[in-house]
Image 1: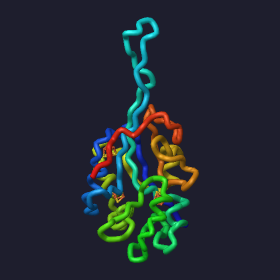
Image 2: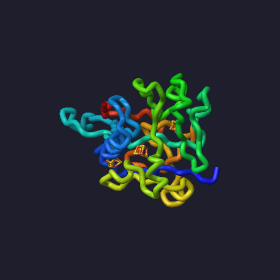
Image 3: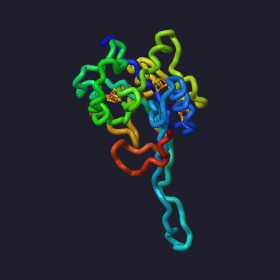
Image 4: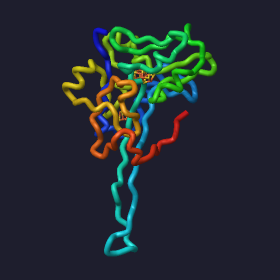
Length: 209
Ligand code: SF4
Ligand code: SF4
Ligand code: SF4
């Protein structure tokens, strides 16, 4: 593979506004129930009694932050490995794509992907997911989620270049640990970011339609 395109996400400044997810849904005219980009709000901690005044409640390890996520175009795409119809491929630039003319709708990839990135279109009878706005990127433009972000916390680029610039964090809660699929993403963690798999909080936001 010549290169690996990747997402960059700065969780330290994401407001959770979901403009990225709406732009994605609009660009690809996605039906109700299918969201190629999702924004999770992750929260934890609680309130405890003051040690000197039991009637007074004080915060204890309270945190909340947002994580915008889509298909990670993984370096080890398990969705591709489990597909019995060879409908999923990884291009030379690292982009993982589904050929819907080959998809037989078995949904193995949906069960395998730890990011919930692949989503079945009941009406069309095939699996769908983020295509990295490949049509726009071929014209030298950015994906619509990137352009829609008012906080400028999303971007795309070469994985190695993004790592050199921002570090090599690729997982924070509530995303899974990166060892299974090696996601092509670089994350600047929120100051309260929890370690992937720690289970110290829970997802607050409800599923959008
Ligand atoms: S995020 Fe899921 S669908 Fe996307 S490449 Fe990785 S395993 Fe496949
Ligand atoms: S790159 Fe395009 S298809 Fe993928 S999440 Fe962003 S807007 Fe959606
Ligand atoms: S548009 Fe930007 S700030 Fe808003 S939720 Fe998406 S990534 Fe976060």
